[in-house]
Image 1 (tube, rainbow, N blue to C red):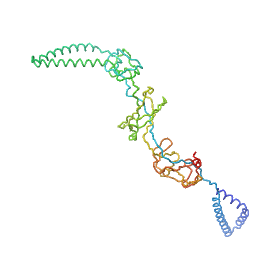
Image 2: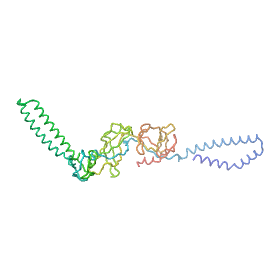
Image 3: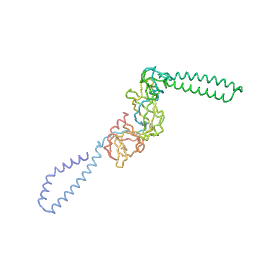
Image 4: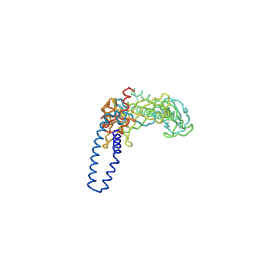
Length: 396
């Protein structure tokens, strides 16, 4: 506004005497007299100084009379303390310790498969049978020999207890009996390996080998069994979070495929850092009452690794940085009843970020009025007008 009034004044002044001065200056120039030209220039400089002084007086008067201050219009937010929960976002896979592909403990022909896919089984239930290759007959013979050895030992013991017979006969009978017992036990263990039993309660997810197939110990896959009750998510966490991501921390699990969100906690945090990728493993328990969650599903995790109950949070968009790398914001000070105040630059220290907000850990006091819209266009010490001042005053 000051500049506009100054230009108008000069326009009127020049219009009134411009023609006369033009002619006068032209005559002086036509004279080609150095002294005359220097004298005329001096006169014009003096006139210019006088005009500038008058313009200054007019500007000062305009400033006192102008009720509409032309200052930058800005909006503000008030710094206040609130709870801040920072979360670490990771991906993980659903798994279970009760997921197993069963293989045989002995070689032979798979003579019987007693279960079907999808069948529920209990721990210890017989799932399949492998031909024992004559081990049953050998066991019968060993039992006969063991019975004979037992009878001999018992008779020899009675005689020895009556001090009849030699000690060597008693010891030989005892040794023979114990040897036969061990042979029977060993054969029973070998035959037991031909019977495939469920290692835990669960569901037969897949029957891989069919009846009549020749199977090899520890190699041939017979069937897959799974228990969906004890499900958990496993993920790898960067080592810098080793002191923050611990047992008991809150976790929000999102399963995009199922459209589910589950609030749970960390049940296990690894103590060993993987040297290959500098991470440690974390297990997160998830309930699965409806059996909808399956192994190997992808899960999105939000782990609460940091909490500040009295944090000052501000939008990242209001923060600027100077040449020294210091971060700063502008706050409004000395605000009058009309919402006019002064912009003040404040150097701040920031902490963790979450989405569009950032934690301020130093330099900013609670209740400070921070410039939001217009923060990039103001200068330190500049007058500003808070356009949301009246709305705040009316409680809107």
